[in-house]
Every structure is written in structure tokens, then in C-alpha cells.
Amino acid sequence: MKPEQSRSLPLAAAETDGPVENAPAQADKTESSLPASDATHVTGRDQIPAAEAAAEKKKRKGDAQVAVVTGAARRVGREIALAMAARGLAVVVHHGTSAVEANVLVNRIRSEGGTAIAVAADLRDPRAAAMTVFEAAADLGEVTTLINSAAVFQDRALPWIDLYHCNVHVSVNFLAPVFLAQQFIRQLGEGHRGHIINILDWRAQRPGPDHLVYTATKAALSSVTKSLALQLAPLVQVNGIAPGAILPPEDRLNWHEQRAISSIPLRRTGSPQELTDAINFLLDSSFITGEILNVSGGEEL
Image 1 (cartoon, rainbow, N blue to C red):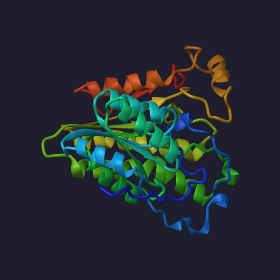
Image 2 (cartoon, rainbow, N blue to C red; image 1 turned 180 degrees about the horizontal axis):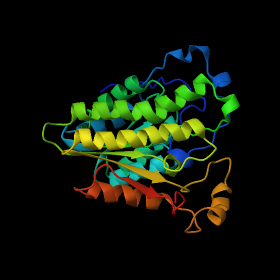
Image 3 (spheres, one colour; image 1 turned 120 degrees about the vertical axis):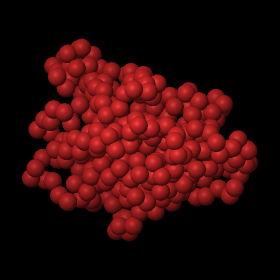
Image 4 (cartoon, rainbow, N blue to C red; image 1 turned 135 degrees about the vertical axis):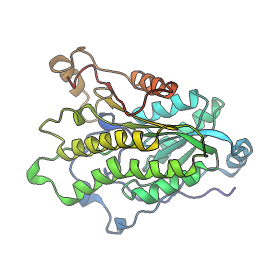
């Protein structure tokens, strides 16, 4: 197998490698920092040294069970990918532009006896990105677990909302999970069981005055979760997890502690382990579908 060079264009704060609050709260600078050529988004596989790629190919039998985790290179997405590897699944580590972090994670999984590949794909072009991710996953085997973790988490008050702000959130937070689910069912073998888990947000159930467009896209994904649970039953279980204060934004490190005092009933923040425990709980169940599991310390109440 010849290694391919990843050519994904800069996301410029448009797509974060991690779910909801686990991603940095980016400043509103997306449009001015995007190159003019970014109207066309190029996606591709990450480059892997030839010797390492050859060794990895020997391990690929085409019959492994595979987990695709979007936004898996950093923060909570990274912890989810490690949890899937610990379950014995081969892992597709999707990322936007965090190639270094993604490859470090892949190497760690491989060093611990697992199988993983890194795939760069720009979720702002959701259909093309979904096809890229699942084309790469086919090298490992059948994808039986899809975890949609990547998200855009930006806040703009109504006077400053524009079409670009809306389109980025809709594409990454809402349409990408839909097209990834489409590719998921197309490759799933007849009669085979599978799981789709969408990482949502407690705000989708109790919207506040902030993060207007972000919250709307997460609410839409919550609706899609329930609809797909009905449409894909009985073989595919589709559930959502709505985290709260798991990891603070990197530019607001004391935000969660402030919320723990004022608005979280359990009066503490959560941890990535609690989120991955919830994911494993859903994956271990054969009789739960269409549910939204809050991992928020009760903040949505």
C-alpha cells in the first residue's frame, strides 16, 4: 500500500476535534481566516511511513470490527477512540487538521496491540468527508460502531449571526452525522448488528440565550437520533449522549468550576472517563435505542 499525503485545507476554527464543550470556544474569526480557495474542500488519508504501512496491512484481514470516531485526535474524542480500542475494535481516528495528534494516537493504539488509522476529512463538506472516512475504514473491515463526536462550538449573538456561521454549524454538527450514518448502513453486512452514538449536548433539551445556532444544530441531531433509531431498527441501535461540564474550553479553564457552583446539581464537573463509561454502557446493551443519555451532573434539569 502506498501512503497517501493528506491534503485537507485549514479548518480555521471551523471544525474542532472534540465534542461540544470539550472543544475550544473559538473566537468569531472564521471567515476572515479562511483562504479564498477554501470553497472546495479536499480530503484524504494521512501519510504513514512505508514500513509501518506495510506492517499494518499485514494485520488487516478485512473482517475486523471497526469503530469510526469523528473528531478523535484531541481531548474527549481522543479518549473515546482509546476506549473503542480497549474494546478490541479497530479504530478510524478521524480529524480535521490535527494530523500530528491523530498520528500520535494511532501509534499509541498500535503500540498497545490495537489497530488504527488516521483519516483527515473536512466535515464542512459532509458528503465527501463521509465517503472518504468509510473508504479508509474498508481497509480495516466492517464498521459496526459509529461515534459522531466532532463539533463546532461557537457563540454569536443574533445581530452578528451570518450565513457562514450557520452553514458551518449545520454542516459539521448536523449534516455530517447524517451522511456518515448513510455510509455506515451502506457498508454494514446484511443481518449484521451495529451501533450509532451521536454526541449531543444538554443545551439541546434546555436551550439558553447563548450559542443559538450551535444549540439548534444539536437539537436537530437529537431529532435525527430518534428518527434513525426507528428507521434502522431492529439491527442498528441509535442513541445519543448529552454531556455537560466534561472538559472546559481551552480559553476558559475556570468556566466549569463556576458552573459547578451555580448550576450543576452534583456541584462538580465530570471527567472523560464518565463519558466513555456511558458510551460503553450503550454499546453493551442490546435493548436500548432512541435514547438520549445525559452525562451532565443534572445541569439540564
